[in-house]
Image 1 (tube, rainbow, N blue to C red):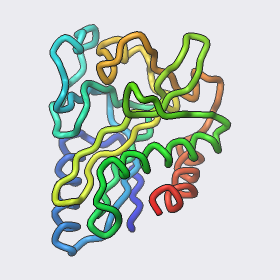
Image 2 (image 1 turned 120 degrees about the vertical axis):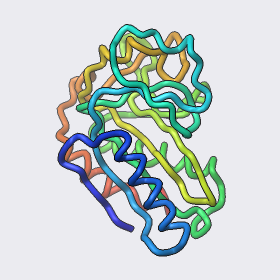
Image 3 (image 1 turned 30 degrees about the vertical axis):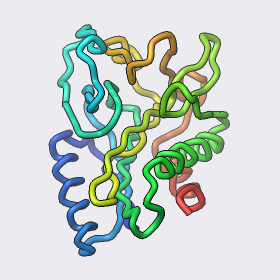
Image 4 (image 1 turned 60 degrees about the horizontal axis):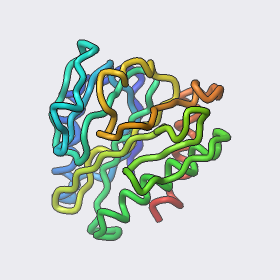
Length: 205
């Protein structure tokens, strides 16, 4: 397993190219599994279930149509994106179990930040209770090709939440989006990365 942490914002097209090359190498058993921690400049991604009505066009950000499941989401500074490239043929050939493991990983890492996050049957991802009700703090999107995973989970540490007003996040109306900062919790990227590494092995055992 290789861990990669990018200190600068990563171009989205470059991220796609890296993941595709890495996944091919894993499929051919030439490269190791990989977890890539990074941030993007502000942008939206549209998954395979995205609907035009979910894109509200209130912000002039680039939109990338990609092959993960799900609808629209936002990526940007202050958000820790975790691209997880694992070989499920060497683990468990169960995509739902992989998504469950991503969620469990997030639950445990956020617990170390003092946050109680939970799953919600209404949608994939992690949610927390706020004064405004249930709000999403981590989004999950996955694609699996020849049993090697692509994409992963994105945690809101301190992004500009205003950008979420440009979309209906994940197609779910009536619920908000929050961050550790909005919850009054100040956690650096380095600290959060350490929590991610600490909790990864038992979540994906």
